[in-house]
Image (cartoon, rainbow, N blue to C red):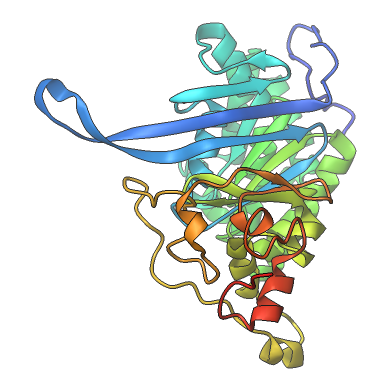
Amino acid sequence: MNTTAYRPGVVGGNGDVNAAVPTTVITLENVVKRYPLNAGLLRRARQFVEAVAGVSFEIRKGETLGLVGESGSGKSTIARLIMRLADVTSGTISFLGDDITSIGGSELRNHRRRVQMVFQDPYSSLDPLAPIVDSVGEPLATHFGMSSADRSARVAELLDLVGLAKGYLNRYPSELSGGQLQRAAIARALAVEPTLLVLDEPVSALDVSTQAQVINLLQDLQDELGISYLFVAHDLSVVRHISHRIAVMYLGAIVEQADAEDVYLRPTHPYTQALLSAVPIPDPVEQRQRKRVILSGDIPSPADPPSGCRFRTRCPVAMEICTTSPEPFAVPSGGTTLCHLHTSGPELRGRSVHTLVTRSGGTGPVHG
C-alpha cells in the first residue's frame, strides 16, 4: 500500500502542519446526553431520554477502543457526540487537548476534518449517481480546494491505499460489491488525513469472509498510518480481533472497560459475561459444554431507567445493594468495572465474574 502521501495531523492544501499529536487523542469526561421525549405547555420538555449517562473514556494515539453493547445502549449516540453531530447535555469532550464541547464555525469545520466516520451500510454511504472518483474526491475539494486533476490523482492513491485498483475510479457504486464499497468509504474518510476514525458497525452488513478482509485492512492502515479508531459494534468476537481495549455499554453507561483480552477472558461484570456467552465458539464440543447466560426481560427504557445499578433488573446475581448506584472499581489489571460484586456481597475485588457463577452454579450470588 502507498502511504507516503498520508500524514495524520497535516492540514493539507497549504503546507501547514499541526503540532505533534498528543499521546491521548480524545477524552470524554462524565458525558451526558438527554433528548426531550415530549413537551407540555410553552413547549417545555416534561420527560427526557438519557441516551448517554456519565460516560468517561479516552483513546490514545494509534489505539483502537472497541465500544460494544446491545441495540439502544447508546453506542451510536457516543459516535455522534464525538463527531459533534449532536451537542452534549453536560460533561466535556477534549480532542488533542482542546475542549470541543461547544465549538462552532471554523473550529467545528476543522474538527470534523480531523475526525471522520465510516458508517454501517456501504450502499447508502456513497452517492449512487456519482462515480467513485467524485464521491471519494469530494472532501478534497471541500477542505483542500484541490483541482479536478489533482483530486483524481489523489483518489487513485487513496484507492491503492485501501486495496482497490485504479480502474474503479470511474465506476458507480452499483458496480461494486459490499466489501469494495466499504473500502471506498474508508478511502473517502482517509482523504482529509484524519487523526481519529469513528467506525460505526463498519462490517456488520458484510458477509463473514469480507468482514475479515475489511478488519485486516483497518489493522494494516492503523499499523502504517498511526491512526486511532473508535470501533462501535455489537459482535464481541469482531471487537476482540481489532481492539486494544474494550468498553462495554449498557443503557447509556459504560459498565466495564479494560484491555481486550482481559474483557474477553476475564470479564468482571455480569452483563459482559452474558454478551460473551452468546458468542459462538468454533469448537463444537466446547460449544455444547458451555453454559449460556440468559438475561430475563428486555433492556429497560432509557426514559425510565432502573434506580441504582441499571443492569440490576436483568442481572442473574442482583443483590439488595444493587438498588444503589455502584462506584467505578479499579481492577488489578488496570481496567474499571461498575458493579457491587466487587465492593459488597461476594467481594470479587477485580476477579472474573466467571469465578462467581462457577461457585454459585449460575443461580445467584455467593456470600462469604
